[in-house]
Length: 441
Ligand SMILES: Nc1ncnc2c1ncn2[C@@H]1O[C@H](COP(=O)(O)OP(=O)(O)OP(=O)(O)O)[C@@H](O)[C@H]1O
Image (cartoon, rainbow, N blue to C red; front, side, top):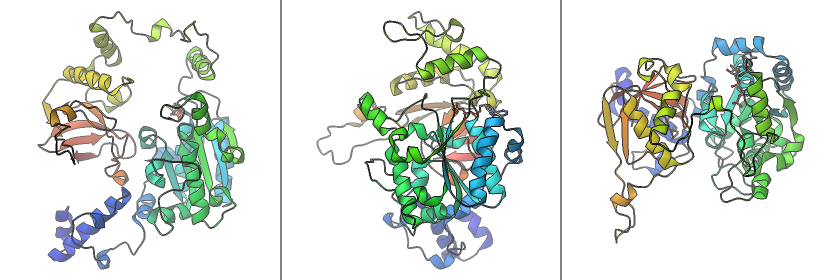
């Protein structure tokens, strides 16, 4: 890191301070404070940003893709109506709360991209967030709502976000002309209410929802609902945004035309019937999947191989095509099944292989109740397996916010291009930073 600074500056003290300021900013974007690490003190005299928070600098540096700017010319009728109505509130600076309600494939993301491009082209700040990292990573400058708004992980009624009124996040939100939160149907209403409480506070407008900002929520309640651990149906419904007092304040805009499967009206209807709960079920409550979208299950070990072959045909001929790799996936419900599928799948890739091992030990365990051998068998969410086997050209998804401003967030899609002893050489293959090469520690 210091080499870049040393090119322009000979003084070791100044170089050290510039590196420290860089580290401080990176840590702050991850919600951490450099003062809690054993590092030399930071002298803000060397900060060249004139006190403008890093959050605002990063947000205003997002490049608008001309393709996104052109999207507003190809919106369908419902998208256009929503686009015009939302932008009118931004143009008149009058604020407004919207919920874009559309089944999968009706072009919600397409509409957000058009809105973000238009507002950013005008030199205004537009904040793009989504509940999941994967959805956030397909919007330019997208971040998970939890990370962007500093929403506490354990959340109850009446909660607030953890940023202070003087923080960079607060200043960014005060300056924002548009805030987008995709997949709001998947988040607990308390998270949205926490943002509302904090926005009223930082905008000094306690009686106006979200302090009078234009905030666009989107989602589809036919898809995944918020997760409530061991929650009953009633508790899950109570956690949904529809049960929030804010729901009644939102203007509901409907998208109805499936743009993803325009050529397959039968499939569109079928998906809608499942989402709406009107598809026929058997005595066990199961629906029947049409044979043409199923790989038959015989109970044989080779079933999984057939599934892989059907999802990834001609794999080794298409390795150079990031679109082939990122447009297909095998989903599973349990981490141990995922690890098993990954191990089998990785064997199918031709080319150089590398195996990385984790080194875990339990803290405060004088009696050695948790030996490394036992820790290595655990497969908790968000951690890679003890033995991580990778090959050149295999796809991976990042599960941590390492450097969100440069595209390394929870959900970023990457392809392995090389190996080092303690780092993986990868290429970002989706979103605003695609084609960028980075080293993952
Ligand atoms: N007006 C449009 N003109 C052309 N293509 C469109 C239009 N709107 C959407 N699409 C295309 O339709 C597909 C689905 O759109 P998009 O991903 O925005 O839907 P979505 O509602 O966000 O779906 P999901 O809920 O599954 O995330 C994309 O390939 C997108 O490019």
